Length: 267
Image (cartoon, rainbow, N blue to C red; front, side, top):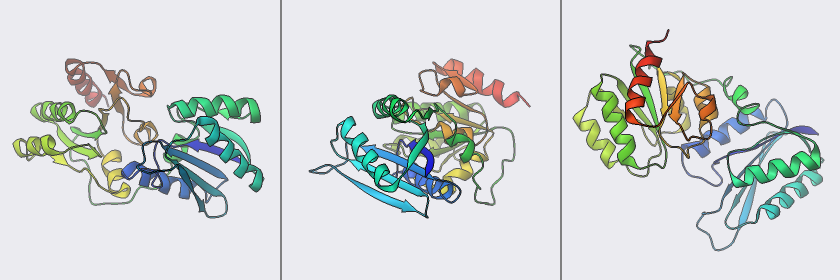
């Protein structure tokens, strides 16, 4: 059996935020159509010993989620042993930007002569075709920005949200920030323009990612590009791993303000 392999930056077996849930749903949907193995690893999972969980989606899909301290070669050997047992032959690999992704890409390209895709195909092309849950929510103007937060400093994302609100944009804040105290205070100051939509399940988060006029990812370490690409134009910090694929990048708030204005004025 031949198929493709996708190293995920999160999964519900190893991460508890919306990203893990989203990737699990995407994997289940893809596996209805074709053979697919997805992988994830959380080395900081609170446990006394390393382990992994194997999840089966339909007849074609598999996910293996590792947690705890593993060496990169140990992870590779465990995965390859399972492939041997199932008679699976990988033909394409999409890594996430990580040390494990680089290691597996080099190892498997040499061992299996597979195609390594980075950063987007084949996953992003498939995500773009996923059905999005219908909801009674549509942009009422071209001045709606979805701000996707991650684990960056909450003060930074709050400052950006306030700046956009001051300039007259409606801002939907989604994601899993480490703290929402500052964002909640900002929403009190701009009740009609700054709306917190954090901690939502994937089906609801997708609505805000796809129905804004512009997406803004504020976390340089936030590997959400496949989901961003499935929606409106998006912008990221200049040091984001997928900066080259974004509609624009910024390194200062002055640049951000002008960039948002330019992109939202473009038909």
